[in-house]
Image (cartoon, rainbow, N blue to C red):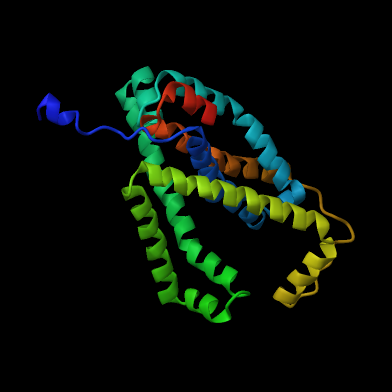
Length: 255
């Protein structure tokens, strides 16, 4: 390929600080924190009410990672991010190994979330339209819903990185609005209301134990370990270095 012809193909460099921030937040919240926080009690029930503390402690522990991402992005804001950093710092074998582990675990987690998406959407639609919700919860509806989500996401990415930036920015504001609504509703509503709703749904009378059991330190540590993977979404920010104008300055600011 001639040099003149090759220069016709360049990365768009159309993203800014907000899109980088939105990409990382959307990946962390949607694919990690939002899922892990509500599922951890079913896996480690003895953690009890310490899930928010586990989220906070793990977030503090991840600050050095965020700092390193910002530093590396300021000197090597390239498409490939972690692979480029590790390969150039420690050699190609190390870069390949670390990135291969991400290829193995990343798609697996996305597959789990994608499989659960149909059920989540169907249950969410039930109070709005029982017919639509029931249709989405059927095997056919589940399959069609998942395929639609996959191809809509593919179409957004294939349309260009500018459309991707708009998409994740919208998701960022949806996440913020959802978090604020849940927080306000949670603090403004009596716990008895939630217990009554859960009792009606399970057809079981629920009551607090007379002697609350002690929290489990091993379960707390295990939940913290789950949140380590939840915070992996931070890597979505520096991955956009090749598509960002003035990336040496904007990518670290976004992180």
